[in-house]
Image (tube, rainbow, N blue to C red):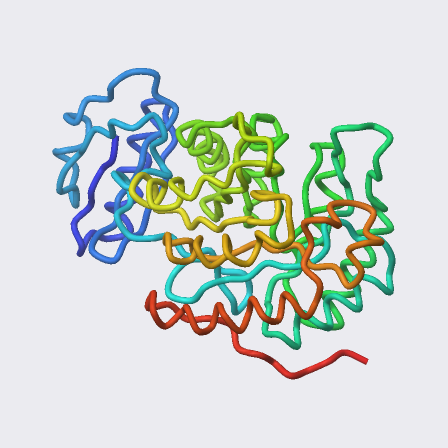
Length: 346
């Protein structure tokens, strides 16, 4: 159910509607929009009667929501959501680029990459500290030490950090360092973790699971939103199919379809989507043409020495070429793009 308020509704009238929702045993969610303010309702197991709200002062209408994912649906909010991170954002007019190594491997490595990325105009630094891997014998990340290196890199460059949350136990430590909390493909169905992230009120980057449908991805986002955190960024990172020549099949259909179904921003990870560095640039550009709000790219100064995902990581010179082509493409799709900063950290 979506309770639509008059444009001139007073704070008292809005609070009265929210209190009515609470009195029925449900949870209200304020959803501001350009044209209207609406209040979403969650917690109900069946249909809620519109008669509870239509007679309240300031209410225009009460509309049933047909999608199982309610708060992240276009039915609830027509305008695109823009997730603000400091002075920067993901969603809206400007394309966002999240880049960095798969794993934080050393202090010198992450400082070198962060400095290089800032020079190229990137505003979001990715790097894994806790690495859930398919094999228990693979490199699992530097953990707390990696978080400290990531924090130092952010402080020296001013970049916003993005790193993966592995579980609820390590969530407080990761949340203390990371500006955006990443949920990896393996954790898309970890509902306990999603609910905790909803309570934190910190931006969340939610990656699509290996074999997840778009509805399942949006339902996972709904878990976060249902706890009051609406700053959610979706990420298409490829799905598992019968094709074996690439690591995953990058589903670019997901970009315009998700835009149709949801108001949340969506970025694309062509590094995991293809698993091959020479496919990253063409698929990154194709992602922007498909309507993506940004990209997540793995970059490593020495991919042949990387402790994880070296084969899909771009060298700095290749990444610079991608950024140049991205700027050329941005004007054709009527988007903005990060410009080179020209500042190197000593």
